[in-house]
Amino acid sequence: MNIQTLEKSLYDLITETSTNLPKDVRRAIKKAKEAENSGTRAAMSLDTISNNIIMAEDNVSPICQDTGLPTFKIYTPVGVNQLEIKAAIKKAIVDTSADAKLRPNAVDSLTGANSGNNLGDGLPVMKFEQWEKDYITIKLILKGGGCENKNIQYSLPCEIEGLGRAGRDLDGIRKCILHSVYQAQGQGCSAGFIGVGIGGDRSSGYDLAKEQLFRHVEDTNPNADLAKLEDYVVKTANTFGIGTMGFGGEATLLGCKIGVMHRIPASFYVSVAYNCWAYRRMAVDINPQTGEIINWHYQEGEKITFKEDEVAATTEDTTNVVELTAPISEEQIRSLKVGDVVSITGRMYTGRDAIHHHLMSHDAPVDLNGQVIYHCGPVMAKDGEGNWTVKAAGPTTSIREEPYQGDIMKKFGIRAVIGKGGMGPKTLAALEEHGGVYLNAIGGAAQYYADCIKGVDGVDLMEFGIPEAMWHLNVEKFTAVVTMDSHGNSLHADVDKSSLEKLALHAERVF
Image (cartoon, rainbow, N blue to C red):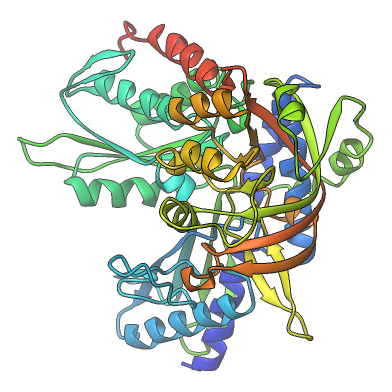
């Protein structure tokens, strides 16, 4: 095999997966847009998502800044050297990371050090199978941390919140899957897709669940009972009112794919792999002699470009948007309420897990009084003059910072926090006491928000790695929605409560 050609094919596969959503996923998002009520927060989110899809493809830049943990599934004919393929995959990973198609995400679990090139112990994940076909198939999924953290596994029988007892039968499986959608809320960047694995052990069940995510969105399960259940789950989940980004709305789940395997008598697992709307998976067939791509998967049917939707979105009424410039006063914050749309111009600072942990016991490297913290781990690159540029910069899931956020806001005088998925009661209490606000940006919209960033004015704490450093960003018209205000109101708590009530309506159904 020509190794250089194979490396180029793998580079193209990784780039395409990171920057260009497959046709079946685009059609699912288009369907969700058509079902949504116009003028709502969910409709605005879907408009932003579709614009982001256009920008990522046009810019050949990551759809979402969290390019996840690359997982490869490789099928090879007998006799193909798998060691060569492993080496070529690692080379392509390093090259695409250097070219900002992937964010450096490989972190040492003991030291916290970022390798900087997405290589590390066990990374990237590569799983090989041999087959009788005369070509190689390589599948890749980039599953970000926000949705990966909403994966869930059930051991039957069990008691499930809102649904009661789930037994070792198809109805118990049904209850598990419905609950998996409810518990994800907006933290996994809904509207999402789920892969379900029934049976196996704890590890093989999750493998089976993730394997389902390689199926086509529009396929039909060959098992009639599972085909019926897949259809039922999507229709039922879309009555929960969780909606896009957890803002409420008609589109909560865009696809459900279920696989089954045998198990031992003592164990009965239902494993669910949740995937965000930025459903980045692709596959190619490769000539084993030349290393060239001979076929791209997921190319059937119409490709939705969203170009017409982009024009429509730019003509929306923006008269109700609240303009903010940092530093922001407590009076301005107290005037905001849940549901307000704000547009921020000026300075904001990124801060994720490492920054929040650091600030609990250290002084801030900058004056944060009245300032905005953005839960974001951007994809960064340097231009020809050595200056940092932002290649992708959407929000990360905020709930991870719940143990720290309220204390840090009060300690440093921070007035606004931007992220996705909302935060919990400790932060909500601090917002009310201190005079702060939580702003929900659109998860996955990394190109849309990168376009709002007009410059990088500095960076601190680079020892934590690019995603975890504190970047000083100069932004213009950065739009987000108030979902937790300084008056004790939380849209996330309201949607969680109402969706749990709707989930409970399906407790007595026997499938």
